Image: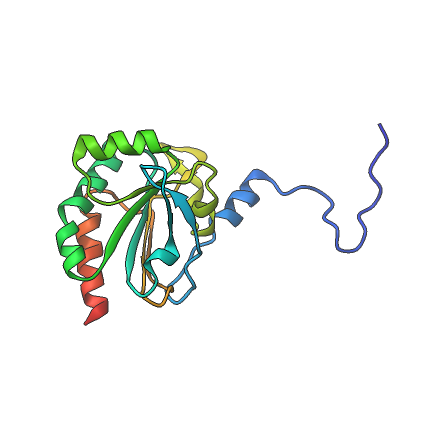
Length: 182
């Protein structure tokens, strides 16, 4: 097998490591950044796009998996606060790698009243910095970084929360969105 010659100007000599790639994928959005556009299937297979909410603020939260303890707690708490979010003029949607069948079952089991979108290739998660290297019980792996974004009516990130704790997070988001409006 012939050896590779020296890299030409502008070429990279060696491929980035998984850690470097994960770090790049986990670049975080900040308030004022344009929210990355997306169009993903919901629990019924219908495409839902961020542009569908243009002119209205929306809460977009990323979670690891349907019907797991932390994710269930988070989803149920967003659902319990949904009327308050709606009164404040906010829509809510959740995004995970799970498919439509899992989302439909999860919504039915817990009576969730907001859309759950599927991002099995993690593309949207990567663009939001919600996919990357994380540590759980001392082990590093690539996965969903539990994150939430308040996207303003102007399509810009008004607030970003990364690495959130599921319990109590929905109430905190509601409280902070009220503070942002006043």
